[in-house]
Amino acid sequence: VAERQAIYGSATPDSINALRDAGAVTLVAHTEDWTAQELIELPLHGFEMYNVHANLFLNIVPVGQLLLDLSQGKPLPHPDLVLLLLMSEDPAYLNTWAEVLASGAQRVTTMGTDCHRNTFPQPLSDGDRIDSYERLMKWFGNHLLVEPDGQGNWARRS
Image (cartoon, rainbow, N blue to C red; front, top):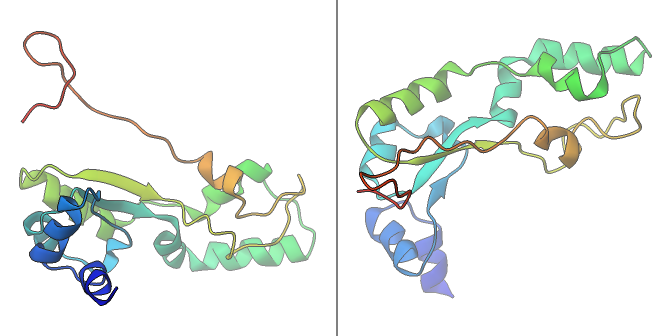
């Protein structure tokens, strides 16, 4: 158990390779405190290039206004569009992502919803929480940019 905890709680190349050797997919979440150089040099599969939670801090005034308007019964946008008021491009995440991609490092990137249902328990007009899993997942999808090999196959190309 101690060895597993030491590996799991470490961000060294050796510990990441040990996890990979055991079959893990190694991804970093909440990369706001990680440098592009770390994400390039460490043997990671990928990293998070957007996170709702981190993004809320950039939009703290609209977040406060939303909660105030909700508590006062003021009209709000359609419940599934309320989060649009709180989302924006995060330069720190985008710049890190761009630097890693520009380096030629091949990394899977993810977008984090932080849908733990622990931030906005207030119900909207549809009766569901602001931070419901279903509501947050509507804003995120998976898209792959791939090209077939010379024979038209879609297998991984190194």
